[in-house]
Image 1 (cartoon, rainbow, N blue to C red):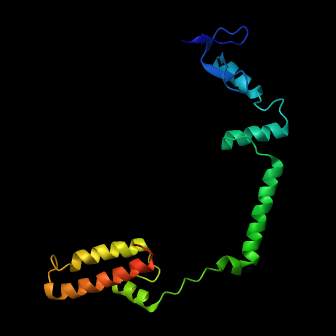
Image 2 (image 1 turned 30 degrees about the vertical axis):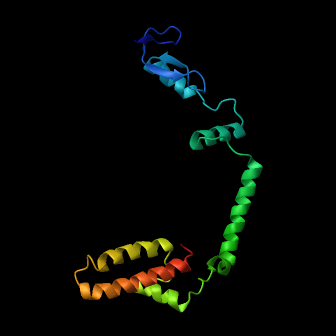
Length: 167
């Protein structure tokens, strides 16, 4: 439905809408000429303080009202302190905990399964299942060597099971 231009005395069709208020829920309907005139003179931020304008902008951009400025300044100070500590005290950030020493038999068991010293229990289980399928005497292609290899990986798995505290 085409409305009549809402500018006083105009008889043209009101095909262009222009906001009545800042909440943008109600609109005027003007012809193109009067809409341009209205929009040229309309100020969205009229009668707002600079703080209200900033709060509105923050809400529109970030979807939340501006936080407490004192809290924001404290957060900024904490961030600056972190960055300065990072730059000036680099050695404390680079410090890594040294891995725990593993005993000879554990290292040997990990090598038997072809795993790194940093392997987790999950890594051990996955590798054992893969090797067990490959070397099980019932399914292996080379039956003579399969039994010995399967015994080796099973012994390594049992030792690692104890090392990781599994039952």
